[in-house]
Length: 371
Ligand code: OSB
Ligand code: MG
Image 1: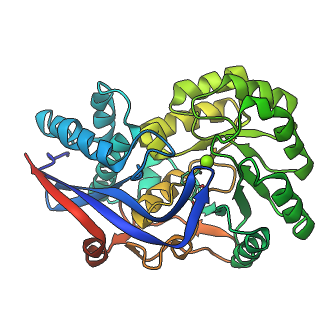
Image 2 (image 1 turned 60 degrees about the horizontal axis):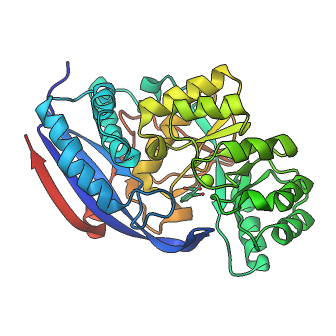
């Protein structure tokens, strides 16, 4: 039975990172994001909107997401009495774009759905793994020795692979030094679109470092230049920002723009679309893995459930709570096993408990919406 959603809450939270996070897009010391809370029949569910304060990674921001949720998506829920996430996904299609705003609300509906069915989300999604391989994404550091030290300590914590951020000027020398110190570790690099096709010869030098993959060398949405580069490189390209839907995944496959796909629930607009991409890639034998947006434990728990699907074949950007935040929003915190994995929660819905006192402490703004 599905009852109506009777109340929705939007919150803007701010959480400081334990260590700054720098990419080719800039350095951030804290995260600002929207939490969506949905209430139905004495049950409530949580979703996280991964849009940031500034439009660096994508055009969405906390302000645009707030606007789209408040003025379009939340009214849609009440007008059409939507409670099922799949129905929300279909109805929300009439609004173009804004995938992160849509995903945050869809995730909250999934959490409620799982709680109503008394099953963890991974079982609803058709997950097959009880543990998922964990990798860590290491930002650009002030110095190469500083980076090597951080890598060393993450390896000691048991992470199965290291991803570093690269950009023009922080690339070949950095990779050389890493390979000198750690010749055989599973290593990949993420450029967040910071190279231009004119730098193709430089990018081809990445082949020297036997990387698991090179993620998103060229700007978002580009498929053609990635296709041209992939044909000239041994290293597998992986697309993140460029893959917006199952339709762009199909085009990337047909054009051979990449050999690996990074799935982020927020970037593609929710779990329904993520599963479509997963299934398409599985059929075409393109391995996928789950990317992250430095989510709080709430968003990360959602990602963990998704990453239990069978074609998530590579280590994910899903790390321990303490790697991101001194005090994560959930109990128990996400931890890495001695095997370098994360265990999928067995409790219903997201399967972890958001701590309301910590949420309250981090909240900058809050608004309640009622039917
Ligand atoms: O490109 O994968 C990315 C963080 C913010 C924005 C973009 C990216 C990232 C990461 C962090 O690499 C991954 C994580 O959440 O651990
Ligand atoms: Mg990326």
